[in-house]
Length: 497
Ligand code: PHE
Image (cartoon, rainbow, N blue to C red):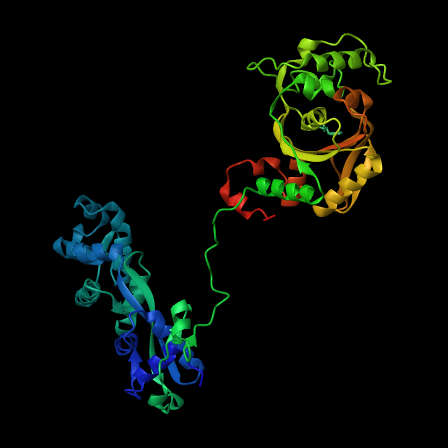
């Protein structure tokens, strides 16, 4: 016999009167429970063990509806009509005088209908009847029926079936409610159980250190876990998915031996563009694409750099290049702007450490005048990196990017020739996602026009990739804006990284 505590308690209580058919109330009182759920649960358990028989009876309670209550207060429609008919002369028993006597027009039609059902006829406009006594009796019977329901609901099976069905067909007079009552009775096998076997043991739901220390858990029963039980979804804090992604990228690069750098959002056009040999006439430098600032309007740049960039841009200096020609504008170079790419961080890093080999990366926000749509925002993030050392090479660049993306879960990477003013060769980096090649960023080896003014002679592998694009893939988003809206519900449901 494998009974739980509740079953044991109920069985024991029922064994005090083995032949009784128990009601819910009786079982609550003998078991001492205050919740009917216990009786129902234990009763079901005992029923499954074949020890208890559960009987269900459904009852139908009748009570007065809204119209029924009105009928109780004012009298049934047929009763009021009948009183009127008998109070007037025979030749007055017609619709016209009924209405002029003040009887509600809306009631008169249905009222006559009901009277017809009772044996009243209309003969040349007048209401006539033969068996006055019979009609009076029937109306009294109906009135009594309504009265009998005025206090409390009555079990339908104890009432006149004909009247129930009659009133059911009249709207709003009666209301019905079905209830199921159960009774529990011991079966033969239930009543043969030895009461002394039914010992309730302590059920342990949660094991405490005290229980372990005092050995009180020994011999106790453990509440089984219900792994199907509904449980609240924990909504504790979590990192914003974008922040988790940044953390993950950070750890991948650190793992690969890179160090992290960062820089300011506010930069000069000189460091953001001129240092990268982006011609001053380049379309991306216009107000349509770049956020220039009023405050500060200008960011000063050391003359030595301005002079070098001027020479490189105008005629190539001694880089072997012919430059862009024209005249370099040093004021243009010192215009303040919000950085348009994080490449500004890596060139500044080289300028500050020209003779120190380095592998560095940075993850940061950049700003461009983009129209907001599904895949564009005026603020977004880039993942930038360089390898600056004597043997830096294109194969090294490609294998580094492949390693990075493989660690992020995208083992299929390809590079395609591309163009950037500051790299040669230049390559676009794509990854394979669901059978499609997606472009994630640019890369290349910095041109001498870039590296010479920075003071280095070593090659520099460089790359810059969009983070949002990667976030959309990894988080399964089809709209980048979802990441930046404060919709906690949605953010909570995004995958953990
Ligand atoms: N700065 C480029 C961009 O914003 C990416 C890039 C970085 C390309 C470094 C080549 C080398 O798209």
